[in-house]
Image (cartoon, rainbow, N blue to C red):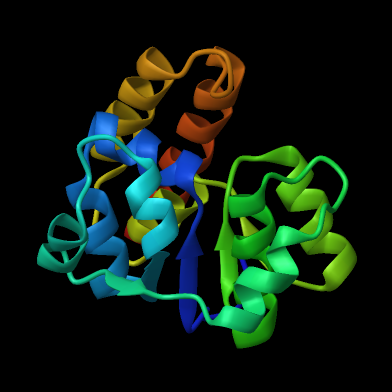
Length: 173
């Protein structure tokens, strides 16, 4: 995880995973880890999530600028328009991009944009003593159950070992 990220920009896939498991986790991230921003174009893409839902948790719904929309309209590899826009906004503002999308992660790496996996934000919560490892694992299980194609069992098992280790180290056991 990047050192003390100032702002995290959530991609659609991470927002959807937490919407289907425990949306409140994103509010905890916003309170204890870093400010969380979400593009309004991303929010509009997700059934059942409105700007007001994000704002209720303290997340900041942001609009992209016209020049960013124009740049995102040009094709870049396998990136969708919204993924390209997420990359551009993260790059322009020096935000950390939180995504599980491999093409977007690759493009972020090429452009020097810091990235986090969707589950890594819960690791930061456990590290900050804002979430218990058991709760983080339970949320990861829910994410896996709703998205087993992209959040594989072995990933959840590895995550469980990491957060249990973080909690053990934090508690001095």
